[in-house]
Length: 314
Image (cartoon, rainbow, N blue to C red; front, top):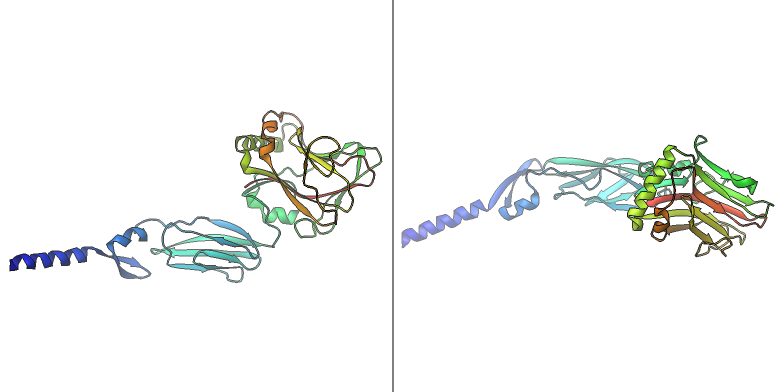
């Protein structure tokens, strides 16, 4: 019996010892209970949820790793700080956020831009977007439908609008200007952002149309508008007036959406593509097409001020 207890004690000691494991972390060996070894992900490769991020000043974002992180660091605390993976954007610039775990280090490049320059969505297709905002969000841009004086143009139909691009503070909070058109004296008005047949923009337009039709809940059309008069404005897109929507009192068909206050301030709208997916499914985008059309009725002097017009995927 005495021998049995001795053997039992030895077995318990061996079991206790075997339940521990020494792992090299942080420059030294540390003993961990065996059941915690999996959570340490011994032998696995450290990865981060993002390799690069763009944040606006004041924004926060959580960066995660596939294992427990021993140390989070920033290469420039004046640009962004990090605490337990939570990044806080401080000022414009770039910094590397690093995570160290299991003697491995991975980094994420964080770019901090001015507040107000970060556009909606994870992917963007601009139609009207100022240069500063475009540059700040270039990593999101899949294709641009902006004018290029080659095969993508803004056409004012039969001189029914006057004006063009105005200087001053735009909808993104910078002084890069915006589109400003005034209804003329012909009794109607119309203009469109035009894509020539066979151009790269047309190819990208078809691809966007197909993506919207396949997953309509994921896509939106964003635009910003301001005015001090009571004019109504109708818009449609991708070469079909079956996508018409109206701000103000409808004058040429289309779906009326919430009107905006006419106080000279910018108002932003996001139009769900889900309500137009069926119409887009049959639209012909093999020839010349208008990616975005604007109509403001026939009252002379009505002003259309637009900015930050783009499709985006959430």
